[in-house]
Amino acid sequence: MHETKSKREELQITTRDGVRLGAILNSPVNTKDIKAGVLISSGTAYPKEFYQRFAQYGASRGYACLTYDYRGISASAPDDMRNNTIQMLDWGLLDAPAALEALIKRLNGLPAYTLGHSFGGQLIGLMDNHHLASAHALIAVGNGCWRYHWPSDWWKEFLFFYIMGPLSLARHGYLKGGHFWPGDSLPAGVFLQWRRWCNNTNYYRDEIRDKLDGAFFTMKDVPMRQFAFTDDPVVNPRSEPFTKACYKGAEYSTHWINPADLGLEKIGHSGAFSRSCQAFWPLTFDWFDSLL
Image 1 (cartoon, rainbow, N blue to C red):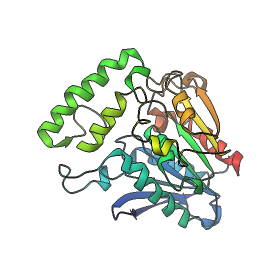
Image 2 (cartoon, rainbow, N blue to C red):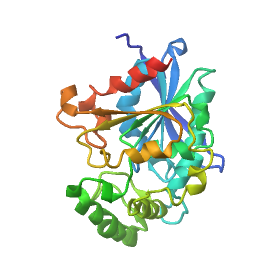
Image 3 (cartoon, rainbow, N blue to C red):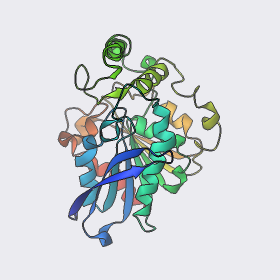
């Protein structure tokens, strides 16, 4: 398969409410080699650097891949993590739309797609401009409520949300990353809203019902493909249908992947973007190619 040379560009994106977000654009060196753009939206608390090798691969396939940090995360974190009103809804209502607009401005009329990991796939329906993207790839996107996850992991979620997390909030004023969990630091409002959703069998449906029942989540005939993994304790046959139910009218398909079929030992919920799982990467961009 032909691969093209790529380049990396550091960007700043300004949202509608004036928040500046850190971003990285990986794209072919020669602009004539760009065939489409892909907005890569992160899972909760994953910084944009987590997706860089994947984005670089996408650039080598001819895609301009934009990764970005949501407000409150990594390069988009405020100077004072303790005193702010940031919530997860802001990521979908304000940050993702701004990132998509920034990407489209650089595409000169070429198609744009989105690729969302975990919450990055849940927020598409919160974007008032998601129609600017002609297709959406989902990586491990499902109901975040603990009741739908593997029972063997319930104790971990309880420990995180009700013991270690609150202790970190009490000590630091926010959820401090890099200590008892691998994610980046999170503002208190984000953590508390996330915990509330993950303790509700309807996940975020109750809080966003006006948007869910309105136009934002309507994806009439828009191609949407879910890539899910059989060893993922979070997204499984019980939690995954939630996503399809949210995106009304989409041309939705689910592609279940057994890691062994790709010669891999494991993928799990977040392994798809690691160097050890490069065998998975072509599947998403092959799908985008099929849409061109």
